[in-house]
Length: 437
Image (cartoon, rainbow, N blue to C red):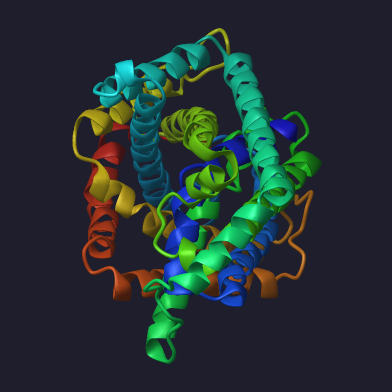
């Protein structure tokens, strides 16, 4: 259970919490609306957690949501989820590695001009740790997630204990020389701001279901997978709400608006010149944990697809330490290729692909309840079908909102899903015999 929470916290709490507060405050410069979108995002995750917990406990297999869609809707639906999830996770690995390189360059001037080299080195270092075995990868995740949580808790406490003078100074400065800060809009612009804010929150909290990527590695999946999922949602939302409250205590919301590094700004107000290196050091630890989790996820998605005959058979083999070695190697190489090439557009498509996967997962719960009513379910989703329906409806609204507001990346994400079909047919032709479900 604790490893499942560590994997989710490690994967989720990363660069999103640095940028999201400034963006949301710019769209919604009102404290109640600001926290409102975070709470709505948390409720969306909570309703989804109930459904994900039932599926994860009933189908405890490594590889994530792919297993649920394959079991309920069919092999192609599973392939779409697994393939898009794997590529997106590899892209996220690259993006996080690049940010680690950039932050490391700010802390260590000697590597400032070698950010991509640092990114590749960190990715390869974690590859070798995980190659040695499951215990090495899981231990690294436990340690880095614990350090990350502790660092953010210390920062929150420092903001509340030492940030009073900074807040008073900011209010005095604002009264003496008011700045051009975005005002709260009304009507349709306000609706658009709320949608954009929710998109930022959903992207920032995505990853709370991390334990399902290790379903068959959990010793007692029936009770522990639901506990890990709910524990992850409450841990992540608790940390995020505390961080936002701490930053708003130090800096008024209208001064956070548009600030892409509000945590660093708050740290500078408290610690002076030491604030920037302190927060960058915390973020390096945070991103290191996220990077390790993404590599753990990616190789297990590919492992499971290979085991089920939807990818080359050799990638289902595990080494003496229990690691799917070839799947880890290919996932690492693809992540490095994204580092060396252009991956920005892939990162922009991530939230669309992730929520599309959620929509298929929640649909899978409805299908399985109807098709297999006698299937063993150690945990049953509370509030079903209402909570599952709300989560599915929220996912559909999110996808529609993305298509309406993002004309560049959402259509490309849809095109990627369409192009997955010929790839699926090629894989089925190459591997005609699949293992039993």
